Length: 573
Image (cartoon, rainbow, N blue to C red; front, side, top):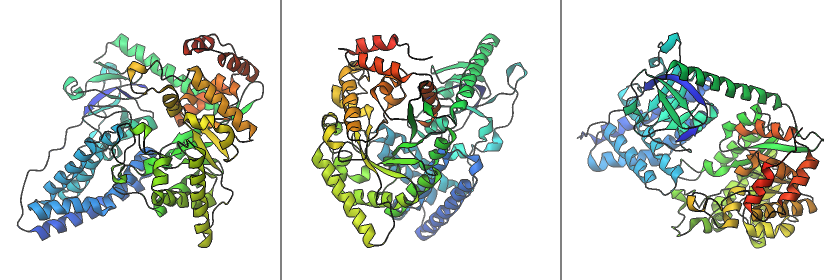
């Protein structure tokens, strides 16, 4: 499975698994509790020291380490371990290992893939403290990755091979020598994948990879095809070197668009913003010259935790991002949970069909305490930059009215306490439910902007599960019904004088960027790594030709005929 795209050549560096502590009992429970306290303190100090050394980690690594710091500071983790010491007389190391394991099993049992992948984080926390107590170094220390001569007289980087790779492991690696990651476990939302993508390092998930490779063997990692080639021939090496050079030349060419505005050849200007999941990724937004943040997925603040973040924690995070963007818009989507994003401590009841159930704004309107905490934090942060609030999954006018009432109530509370905020802060909604698109003429008069979430809009319009291959032909952004709803939303937004953006995966689809331009879309919000490519394409197009193409596509009767029109497009210089 491909976790991060790219191609790398390197020598395999296989990381050994840590050895679990043996079961030992104690007759001095007080002493073990004292050891636990000291171990936690040392682990926290070590984490803070790692975080202080920012040059050794990517923004994503820093975010993950900060999350681990919060988890270790949460008394619930300590309480879990302490309970095992008191109840079963376990020695501290074994209690830590067992307690972290119980939490990991809890995560593994969840339906959501993201949370299943968080199980490794819980074990990582246990190892932090065990290593602090025993003073044993993590086996993945940077000085263990020595320069070793590769084949044909070259020095290659290291392809790190492991059953799993935790954030703590990656922080201790000398990343300048790491060419790629291959793990046995982990999916696209695992920390290995997140870190690899953020550092532009190819990564694969390959079952039993440690049984296929030997220490030091030369390996090619193809993160585009998902292939590994062990001990390649000279001819294969040469072919892949040329591929690496080609991909690098493409990246280098795109950097010229960092300072450019996204403007067509005939002068039509649009914005290209970035989607983020963590505050440190805002640095990437600035690096690629995005026009701001078009989607900050705030639900990730609630993940990897065992209790909701309080108002002060959220305020500081939103404030940090607003200040980092130096006057550019930061659109924060309010808590979007439910569906495939299950957070255990939020106590969302089991549902037979969670995607049609108690999720996103529906959950927030039913749990106003959690919702108001977030809204107050966002309002306070608006005093320090261009924070915008975006509400997900509004389906009815009544839901919007309820939401607006809560926001106004939060404003009054802050005014009563003389806490400053931007009273003219812009508030918009996502158009991802067909009913919202159908009601967009009315909703457009109530809000400050629309953002079209194509991922859900396609699923709900076509009644097709995006993960079900049997209905993949239905889950397509070229379906005429979906395209018509998008055009309707844009038209109604413009009639009311509000901008319309798109923040779903389709916003970066090169086949449809000309179509959306022709429809009148004002803003494309994509992953940071896609910003420059989207800018490049927009700058090569002519808006008048795009409008003609979009008109032709809107008259199509099928996805097949839409694709035929797209394949015949001639709209660039």
